[in-house]
Amino acid sequence: MSSPLHATDLQHVWHPFTPHSVYADEHPLMVVAAEGHWLIDADGQRYLDGVASLWCNLFGHRRPELDAAITAQLGRFAHSTFLGNASAPAVELAARLVGVAPAGLSRVFFSDNGSTAVEVAMKMAYQFWQQTGNAADAKRTRFVTIGGAYHGDTVGAVSLGGIDLFHEVYRPLLFPTLQAPQPYCYRCPLGLERTTCNVECVSIGERMIAEHADEIAAVVIEPGVQGAAGMVTQPDGFAARIAAAARAAGALVIVDEVAVGFGRSGLMFASEVEGLEPDFLCLAKGLTGGYLPMAATLTTERIFAGFLGRPEEGRTFFHGHTYTGNALAAAAAHATLDLMPEVLDGLPDTIAHFAERADRMRALPHVGDVRRYGLALGVELVADVATRAAFPSARRTGMRVCTEAKRRGVFLRPIGDVVIVMPPLTITRDELDILFDTLEAGIEVACG
Ligand code: PMP
Image (cartoon, rainbow, N blue to C red; front, side, top):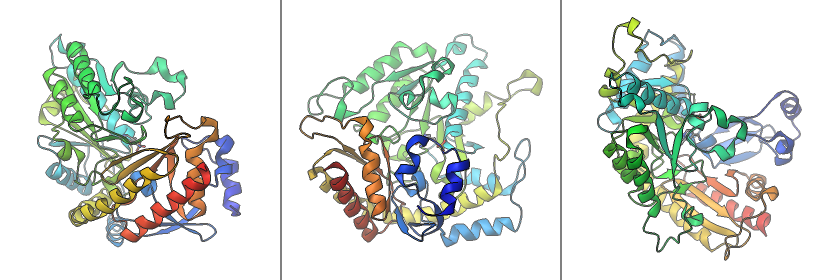
């Protein structure tokens, strides 16, 4: 905390999703270097990157294959516009993404981050129905989402949920959405107990979609687990049933794999695990191995065809960013796709150890719930395990646990009182032990 950079930071920087009144108290890291799965701060301290640099770093930092791919691309060119033009790395990347994506997805629209990947899918779905030429289709203007979800912070993506995270002031700007009950079993929104509930939340979601069938443009699902909602894992078959209800209603299916894509589930995409064939697949975070901002929205020929026509007909999808299709990011994505098969082969062993260490946490005082999906984990801390009573929010218990972990050399970030563990896919068994030992010590000190 002694670096002059901290003073400059406090003087000039406005950090994302950061309450600045407490920012400095929470010992922010000032990263100056990184190596493998470790971050190195301005004082030379090393920290295990337990959240994969916000869930995107798949293979560690300074990964030679990614460094080399970007350096090689730099020797050709860094960026040229994709608006009405093309460049080789992103064009070739589109073909490779189609090759690994769920069946039926054949078109790739690039953007820069997870929020825009979702925003693009929403705008495409909305505009698609407006220009089919059928008056009934034009009434399909609403989106259905699962309660509590986070799909990004652009106004369209915010409309899909997570509104509690944001200031109420945005509400008048949001797109119309319907929210199906969230399968947050630990604090069931329907007041049911896990053992007897019969997944009523899914049935309600299915009925909601059927009742509003004619108005729904698309149903948006984060398959397997709602990450930024606090790692809310879904009952088996949840995503598939919601997607089937959307199909039955004639609505489109948008699958947000910004967080769970690229191996987090154990397979390349959670859509494979959950048996989904979406109309839109949103990818970001891991797409470049955690190196550069790039996102992709994949869709079908049916949707693409809905935007064809003479320019003066106005059917064009008018959306695009200056850095869309960036060549350096595309080079990183190519290297990522090259590495994925081998990394996926090693994942079952990593996940098995991760699961075993995660399960052991259930026995700790103040650990109310442990929710895991593949190599993603949320540990919900409570004041009283028996009653599930939460800690007072002003106590910021989740953040205190992470601060204690940081003091001991592990970097973690909570969502409220849920401590999130999302390590790089290549984390070793020994590093996982360091991570969990440290998290357990942090919980003991901060919650005790
Ligand atoms: N969708 C999901 C499922 C996410 O987890 C996130 C980010 N945590 C986003 C969208 C938004 O991505 P970004 O922060 O890159 O805009």
